[in-house]
Length: 305
Image (cartoon, rainbow, N blue to C red):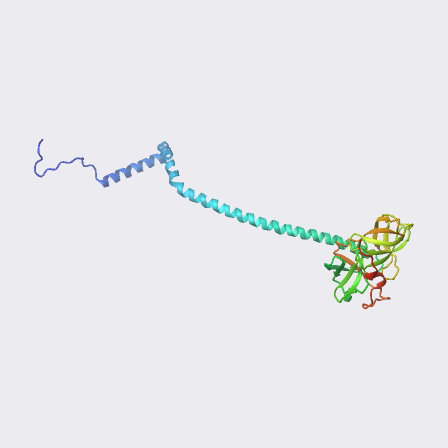
């Protein structure tokens, strides 16, 4: 092998054009290709092929960003949905409560219309009172209403609803009154059978759905379904107001009297508003007048059966 002479170097690669020449060459080539593509669209096929080849790489590069965006959108959508569901639940609860309130108001309005219609048919002066409290003692049927002596209530004032007699005022305070119901065991009320005028006295039994008509002779003309109305005797209750309707009649051969049971016409265990009959101006009743003991003496009332 021949040796290299001193000062000579052996080159492996042939030395090409300089970097500046290459940049100039490629720049000219790019300008020519762009001009041809702009004018004659010769490079469109090549561009489409390159785009097809590069698309998977672009999708792969965008996967992390797309994943982060998708997770963020999903979390945001879930939170928004939960917030929307919670808001709708609150609205549903609110509208349900409003619907219940409107239903209760409608029922109260219906009762008030019945009371007002009844008061228009009454010759006596009346005022509407609302029930405030109910006596918790099961052996005392008494209620508290929100009208007192300042509004026209007085001792012994008759109290009724749209269906009939409820009771009478036992105590009239300045702003409220205690009413004893007709079903109270200590209460008694003169009545008569509407069909034939047969007179009697209705007493309370301690049950809201039951009144007793004692001391009726075995041959008395009374039938199931007969309406009992106030007789007007005693001057406490005006004549002609419904009190109850005969629901059961029984006869014991060994007893001289019939056992006549009646059901009150008034809804005593559901009443919310009542009518209070005011004393006529020509014959006022003193607030200190005692209740007729002959009709309300607890000792004279029969024990509840």
